[in-house]
Length: 200
Image (tube, rainbow, N blue to C red):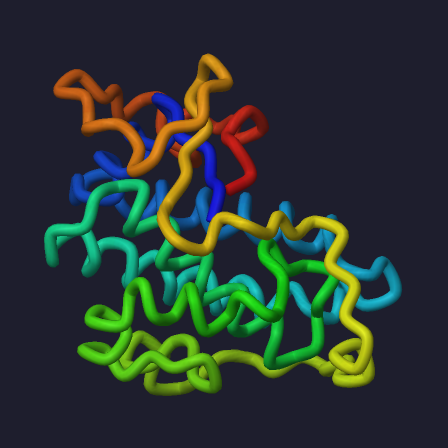
């Protein structure tokens, strides 16, 4: 799929890996992603999905950190979490929130099959072992949307690799290497302003 990558992403990664600021960064990232995706949701259903999304994104941040520990790049680890989210959106019939078309679900699963199988993640169970013991709050589904899915925020044709749009607007495969000088103070949640972080 196509994601963006800039200095804020690397700062946020470093913050998540730094004990002193980890919880602040995690809370900021959860809040940011819930805000982004509820804005993409059907306005009639956005509010009722918030608690579910908060808990879901909190769990995917744990998956992100695990993927980094397993040797995936920052872009790949972040893409893994977005693929998980799109599985969840699909399962609930929230097609208007999806970032890639429904016919690319299997392709995205296959690219990260090793990671997904290791952690018992499937399309039907997008959190696998990362689901908290108490589960996550449910939210009403809209399964009727799967009959004729509309996904205005989806971009197809990027299922064979991770495509990264840089700060200069260039599209590169695989993303950038982590800079040595990532500044934790610029991380989401730590600086108190997440508005300019890319939405993927």
